[in-house]
Amino acid sequence: MAQDVSGGGGTEGLRRLSGVIAALEERRTAVVEELRRGHEATWEEIGRACGMTRQGATRRWAGRLRARSFGLAVDSYQHGRPGYPQALIGSAVPREARRVLDLGAGTGQLTRLLVEAGLDVVAVEPDETMRARLAATVPGAAVRAGSAERIPLPDGSVDAVVVAQAWHWFDQATAVPEIARVLAPGGTLALVWNIRDESEPWAAELGALMHRTTRQRIDTAPVPPPPFGPPERLEIRWEHPTTAAGITDLVASRSYVIALPEAERARLLADVEHLLATHPDLAGRERIAMPYLTRCTRVRLG
Image 1 (tube, rainbow, N blue to C red):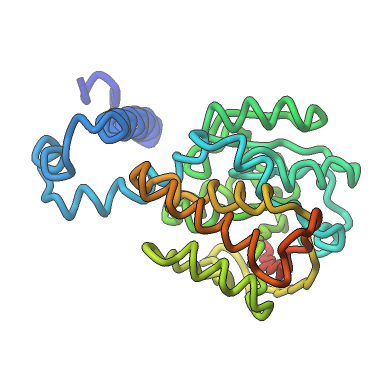
Image 2: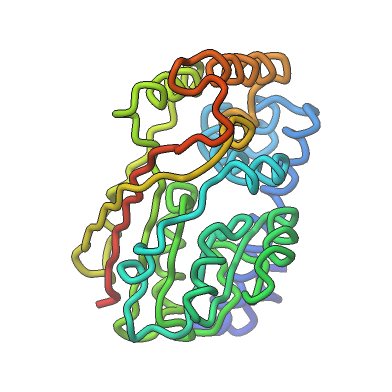
């Protein structure tokens, strides 16, 4: 079979073979996901079936399955996740850019801002449920199925790539050359995160509740490797107007909360609701200003 795919060899044969391997690996990941979601196999059983140890299987797939879990909480994600400050666009996307790729676009929190800025936006999202919501809520964007590791665009077809709240989920060894491939010469990559500003005491208490069982450590000031050049940094302090229900949805949309056993998840959300109802800075307020720091790293293709 491998000989049939690679044909006479050479770079064209290698390209075909690599495509088949990538497709098979994608299917293997889907099978692992089905087994784990249905509680049909342990990590030890999956590891044995793949010729790995339990630890090897967990390292390979656990993070990726969490990255694919957001579609299970699409309503909470859309209602709870904040947008981004308008000032971000001028820093994340160069003035001369016209066609922009929003990679790992979710339900379109940043996509909407890019479209409203008058840009020609392609939004790529791997999760089918998230993608359907994105297409419905941001009809001005061209929505595509795909991932950072397999971007469904031609070489050199976009002026800028933006990645919001998603860089830490990518397989960067594969994603970096793929992003470089779709960028035009001199194009830019911008990596963006919204970070809760926990210098506000009630926000710190909320964060402590959210992370009492799992602490997700994310590098929000990464240095992308070559072929990208040195990073430029930007930080914007701002407030997201929301409600108690919106903050509960924000918590419910986190991947580590989605992954909790149902009883533990329900207990956490009940404790969040109790905090919002009883904290002296929050009790009885219809509108709540959630403090954020938006952090952006921009690099140029060398």
